[in-house]
Image 1 (cartoon, chains in turn green, cyan):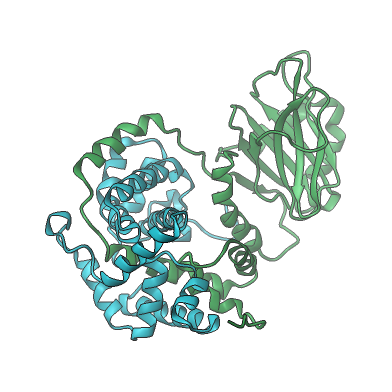
Image 2 (tube, helix red, strand yellow; image 1 turned 180 degrees about the vertical axis):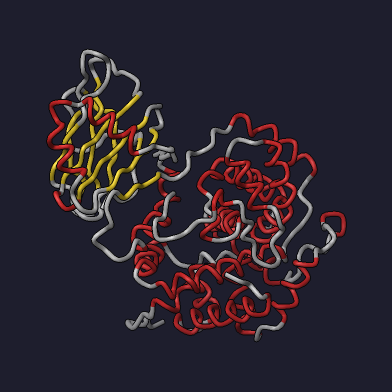
Length: 253
Length: 202
């Protein structure tokens, strides 16, 4: 069989909607979707259509299934919703669709990785008041907050507590603030990572203030397409994450 | 998730369901996403039939289909907070999960089991005729079957192999000895025809 070199991605919407692509092709098509609103529109219609095909196969499940499923609900912890992203200033880019689709493609992987991100209603005021307490970093913080395109992303970790990333793509910087994280024994430490097309880079270790809260972390070198993750690592940190992330944000730029 | 470029209706209380979708499913999913188990009973009652039926149709084994259906329904409960009505109906969201899990199951089966499964899928274009296991075909199900019949034979064959057989389009092309591009086009054209026949609004 001759594999056509001339792949028209528009034609992939049908096979994508039927789960009939292999993993590499699926990823390629998801990337294409980010740049092709017409494909995205078509895919929605075809996905709804594919789901209708399931209706034609409808059959009565065994009656005991209902009791079993309902009894299990209490034992299944629900995932948090997707992270909320706040834009402080109008973004430099005209569209958000790339981020939108990137996150959509990511959702399945995130669920599997148990990297949990939750919707929180965070008011700007509360974030600012958190920021204000960080006296030593205050100047850096206010400079980030006033940069064009700065966004605030808040997510809950799988071990409790929340993290907030204030990201200024214009300055390639990020302030990382946490709240309510469980304290770790001296042998382990929270390590923050920037994860993106240019690889996984450590953004630093969280250090603890005498009052029991972590000191905000200032990270540089934030690049387009980065996400922020955090893992628990041996004291001193590691060059690469060695454990599952306890939180992974959507794209921060 | 906040999408600044889109105006979500306040409270998001619209049921953005297309035709053929059980009204109310989106709202029930939303309530279930808040941990409401009673609301999830409604979700179960609307989805268990298609989820189990689809798994059974693809896997061709009732015990495994039941197992997969249970996994899928619990996954729907677990991931309900991620369901975003702005991106599609709850029905499509849930049945996409169901399809993927059933396909995962058959793709991991042995080659021999897979051949048997395929034979069963292809020789049973209509769902299992075992009356006791069938719910009365809903109006939506009947409409879908009619629309499937309106496709050309090559289109229907490709879609049935891919969707109910769980085959990748490479495998479909191999089996039918037809070029990849042709299969892709048949599937897309067939689905577009189905979409228009069903009056899907998305």
